[in-house]
Amino acid sequence: MLNLFKKKEKFILPVSGDCIPMEKVNDTVFSQKMMGDGFAIIPSDKTIYSPFSGEVSVLFPTKHAIGIKSDAGVEVLIHVGIDTVSLKGEGFESFVQQGDKIAQGDKLIDVDFDLIKQKGFDPVVVIIFTNNSIKIEEKLHHGEHHEKLSISIK
Image (tube, rainbow, N blue to C red; front, side):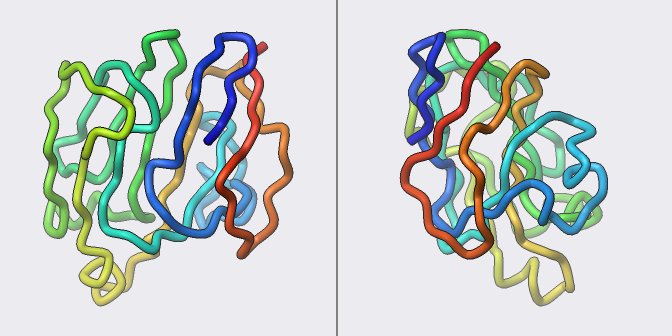
């Protein structure tokens, strides 16, 4: 669970797996934090859940990425896999639509990670806080499993 200190927001990891720092993601847009700070998860489960209560602000037609705005105004983009947009939705099943109100822990997307790997794509799930003022405080080390992380909103 992430604690969003100033807004008293609770953030749960949207998918089970091992956390890695954003700098280790094999894509320069993410690793250089061009879209915002965040981290990534090497997934060990097929289901992506809502990290907090809020609204689905965007759901890409290919279902490989979903944007959520929390009730407190925190914006997050969950991007599943690297270059998976080219799968055109194959291997993704969405349970929500853009504009839906969601609660923390709601099921958002099921992903066939085996298919993603078979097709030669990196299955890493990238979590990007698109509010530029959010910074990850805790350093992540490749391969460590985290149940709690801390971030701050400035």
